[in-house]
Image 1 (cartoon, rainbow, N blue to C red):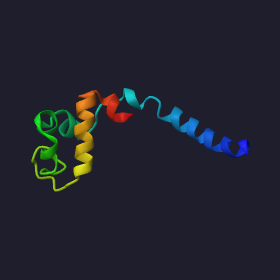
Image 2 (image 1 turned 30 degrees about the vertical axis):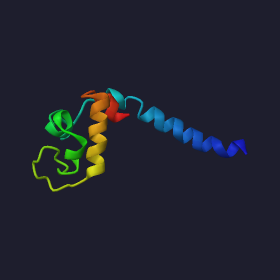
Image 3 (image 1 turned 180 degrees about the vertical axis):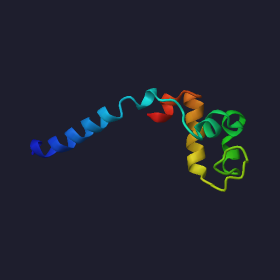
Image 4 (image 1 turned 90 degrees about the horizontal axis):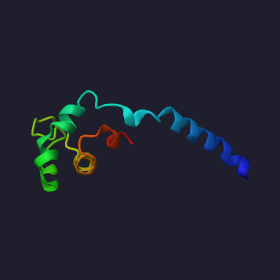
Length: 88
């Protein structure tokens, strides 16, 4: 029975090794706009997230994703602008 777990454990270990340096990476592409410079995340309230689109600043991106923006809001409250928190 223990032998059945060995391939799964090996895959998990290889995956962890492959992504072990990801927390050290910086924000890329639209992260600066969406996470670092977003007035909704830095000065907004959770209720405001459900009234705005995915652009997080009223830019009219057309992507209404309230759970994603709520997740970003909570992560910003916990990690601030430290990219490691978002990458983990």
